[in-house]
Image 1: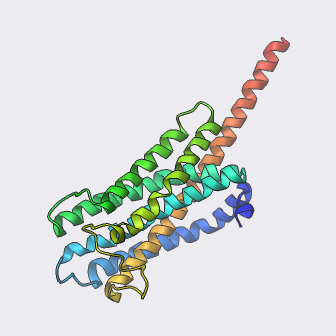
Image 2: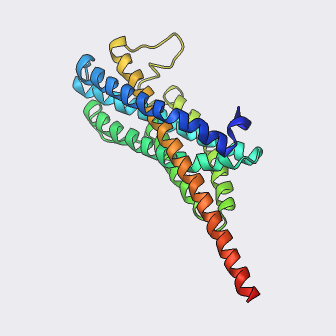
Image 3: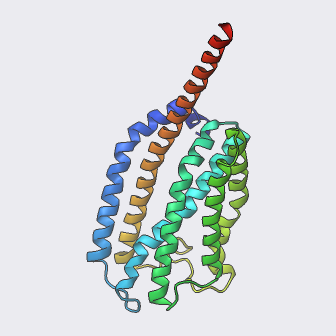
Length: 248
């Protein structure tokens, strides 16, 4: 499957077919999710209406981890199997993952203020998510730090693969250390501990976020490929012009 999608032209054909479905699923998922979250889902008996922040905070946290995992995967694909599309997908996905991480941190601070009485604490979960944010920034900075694009891509890919160790730390930090966060209540052994009235909007919002990310990813990869083609044409034109100059 990796080798099948590694061809840029094939990837773009598949992406073009999926794009309208992704937009439709994103609109449907987030629209229905917001309706259930704001109208149908009840207020929490302890947190009141502030629990509704969960329907943005939790899916954005899932996406922050998932997007970085994707970047690490395509980085390995690009380094090991020499598929340049992996670099393009990583570069296209990084700003989107950064955005999800920012949303996670901001909504977490808002939720923490209402639930814990503080905007921030240096516990394991919050600190590791903040490290994830800096990993995203480092990945994007390294990718643009070299005059040679290939060197920048390789350096960024190595950082993404090394930084992947932070993903399980984020996931299991509430089990390994004492934190203010509650243990996993959705993805856990024995099934979800969340009532269906709250789980439904959470799942709908998560599906909407995934579809929205995929739609933007296809558009950004398309832009990356177009940018590469323009750069190649400009380089070819410049070399052709130089050749004519020397002939004269």
